[in-house]
Length: 275
Image 1 (tube, rainbow, N blue to C red):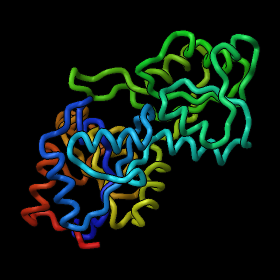
Image 2: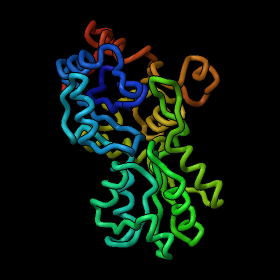
Image 3: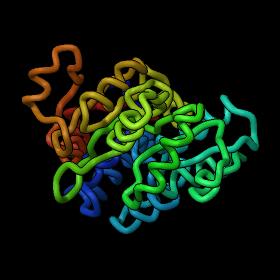
């Protein structure tokens, strides 16, 4: 562990639950800064923009830059930019984070009214949207039926909130897949792409980077697929009983939460090398 100089942090279930910060959130970031640990936050949540996450962290007393925020919407936008020609017609089933990521890369976004009026799209991209309505889901399904490619931001069926697990992006993808019979190409965790891009932002390597997450099937599986060390926190979805059942998804380290990680680092029980 003494070679770790960079951390890729999941956010939902790691840094907060809904709008409630985890205990010791500000102190965690202070400790990482004092120890010279590079930090990038990589989340499967595609509903918000990097600016919105910066503002949310600021509300919790934490100052980060937009460059430290890497959402599955941004990773998906990069994938779409490499895959399709600029200006092609697209339809987004998602919130402002995904809309912004797709629109900013030069694609022409169709409205529900245009789709129902007969317009077709080259691709449909879907992610989490707390404000989703049936008309948006129906338009996306209609386009997929007509031959549009189907791309998803991430497979998370749920996400942790202050109320308990709520439907996540994977549930929206499942709705569209059930309605069309078409399986989406999924970009976010546990695929290695988002981890590789986050490492590039940190200037890190698989040897000196670790993933901190709360889900075995996405954070830990994805970190292992990218060849980096993995740290599971028990403040979100996966618990010890899940670890016991997952023989092939064993994290390198397990902590109760980020406060425990910060304490271990501050007490020099975990020695993260200086940058």
